[in-house]
Length: 74
Image (cartoon, rainbow, N blue to C red; front, top):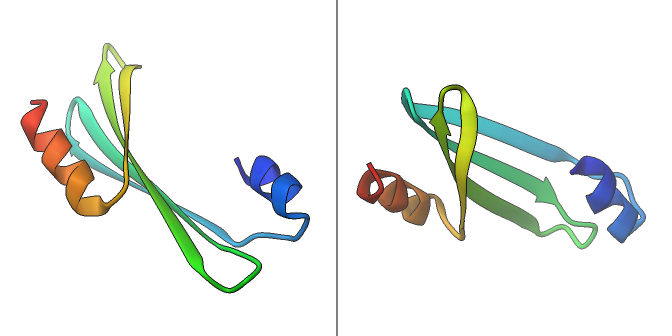
């Protein structure tokens, strides 16, 4: 992901990934990076696991939306 973002902007990026496991089958991951213009961008994903394999990924616009989706889908 870092390569693709850097390729599009042409400048080095500061990318910060975070992963939080909610339960045995649900993970919320977030990635934030600093754009060349100084603004920060964040993306959130909810991952569902079954037998240690990803079976579903849902992209979310905010942390709150990701947490709601994770609770609803249980």
